[in-house]
Image (cartoon, rainbow over all chains, first blue to last red; front, top):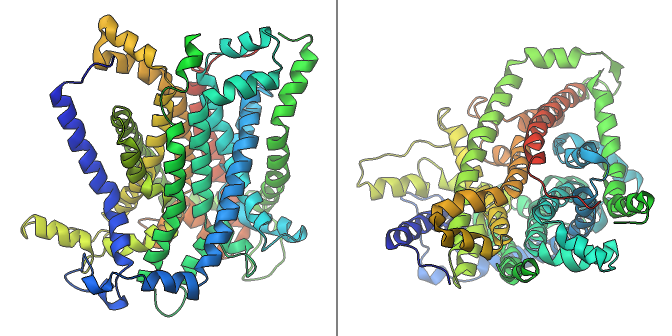
Length: 278
Length: 299
C-alpha cells in the first residue's frame, strides 16, 4: 500500500502543475487559436486572443493540406520519421547492450559514438550533401533517413546505454547460467526491462526527425517535401501566411500526440517489478 | 560465462556493428573534409581556389571579438538554460510519477512543446513576444491592471538573449521531464516503499533511493541537452537573426553566417572545429562523472 501524501504536499503539487501547464501550453493554445484567424487579425492592437465564432472553420487547414502540399508533407515526414526512429532504436539498442555489458571498445569507443552528434550540423551539411549527391540519393526518403539516423543513432545508443547500466547485471547472468544465448538474454531479459527507455528513445528520435529542418531543406527538392519545408515555404513569398503556418503546426503535432498516447502505457511502473522480484 | 573470450568479443562486436558502420561511413568524410578546410583559405565570394594557410584561421578566431561574443552567449544558454531545464524537468517528473490514472493527459499536454517543430514555434513566438501587438505584453498589462509594462522582449539587447533562453526552456524542459520520468519508472516500487516503511519518509527515500538510481539517466540527458544547446541555431535564426546587434548570436549561428552568408569556408571550418573541441572537453567531464555510476559487466 502506498501511503497518502500529506495534504499540504498535494496542494503544492497541484499548484505547481497548473503553473507549469499554463507556461507550457500558452504558446500551443496561441498557435491553435491563430490557426482560425484571418491574415489581418494576426497584427491587431489589442491582440485578438479568441477569433470570432463564425471563423471556427477549417479553411486554413484545407488551404495548407490541399493547396500548399501539406498532404505530401505529412506523408513524407511520416515515412522519414518512422523509419529513422525504428532504425535508430534497433541499431541503438544492440550497440548500447554491447557498450554497457561488454564495454566494447572501452570508453574511447563509446565516446566516439556520441562525438558524432557533437559536430555542428551547419558544418557537416555540405560534405554530407556532396556524399549523397555522389550516391545519387538526393531528393529521396532514404537521404533523410540516413542523414537523420547519423544524429539519432548516437542519441539512442547513449540513452539506452544509460538504461541498461541501471539494470542489475545478475538477471542476465542468471539467464545465461540457465543456458540462454547472449542474444536470448538480451531479447528476453534486457529489452523488456528497458521498455520505458526504448519508448522514450523511439519517441524522441521520432520527434527530432519529424521536426528536423536544415537537412530536409538542403537535401530535398520536388519528389520529397517534408512538412518543415512545406511550412517554411508558407513564409517564403511576399507575405508570411501566419494562420496557415499555425494550422500546419497543429497538424504536425498530431502524430507526436498519438505516439505519446499509444506508447505512454509502456512508460509505466510495474513492467519491471516482476522480474526484479525473482 | 563463455567458453572463450573470443566468443565474447565476437558477440560484442556483432552487436555494435550496425551502428559502427553507419556512423563511420557518414561521419568520417565530413570530419576530414572540415579539418582540411580549417587549415585552408577558401573564400567562395572571391574564388573557388583553396590554398593552405596553416593556423591562420584559428589565430583569426582568437582575435575575433564577435566569435568570443557568440561563444559567451552560447555558454549562457548552455549553463543557465540547461540548469533550469534540469531542475524543472526532474521536478515535474517527480510530480507526474505521483499521479495516477489522469497522468496520460498531463504527460501528453506537457510534452506538446517538444513536438512542435521549431520552424512552427518560431513563428508563433515572433508574434507572442511582439512589443506592440503581441499577446504576452497585452496579458501582462491587463492582468496587472496597467501597472506593469512588459519589456520589448526580442528587440532589447538586455532581454533578447534571456527571451531565447526562456523559449529554449519552454521547448526542452519536457525532454528532461520525460527522461527523468522514464528513469523513475524503472525504479522498482519495492525499493522506495521499503525505504519509506523503514522510516526514511518521502524526502529520505527521494534523496537516498530515487536520485541515485536516476542519476545515470539524468547525466546522459544533461549531456545530450548540453550538446544540443551548444548547437542552438534555429531559435536564433527564426526569432532574432542574431540581433539586436550581435546580442543573441550563438556560436552555431555565427558559424552559419560565415559559411552561408560570408562564404568564408576555411574560417567556418576552423570555428566548427573549435566548437567540436570545446564540446568534447565538456563531454569528457560528464563522462568522468558518469563512469562512476554504471552497473555491472558480463564476464
